[in-house]
Length: 176
Image (cartoon, rainbow, N blue to C red; front, side, top):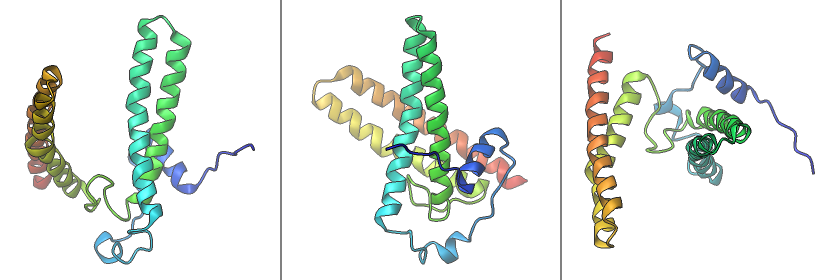
């Protein structure tokens, strides 16, 4: 069975945002409508969140694989992997367009203006730095994976640093 690529308005907007980040689509008011949105809490909502994570992960995986292909002199393979990464990025943006109305796929927090989005990003980085990576680092150490434990500890510090940088950006955004 052959599948045709469907060019929905949402995906066209997502693709155009990659080329022109100034394009902004109208969005419903999250606070007034998100809880009544028929998407919230459905299997489709969860599927979109899962698909977003899968596509975002694919971008990183394919870029990593492309670096390995470059190192092996497999330039055509590297180019193909990078094209697949770009496609996955567009797909992830398409998922975000639908999820924009019901909340951040990572936190379920409102997606809104820059200050709202920075606040959400800060909360995520703080959680990674203060809870997630320290717990995972301890688990790795308990299991005897010292190099992984050290890596995860390093990521905890990096996440805290990112949270601080994002907080500075939030302060600057609030001044405008």
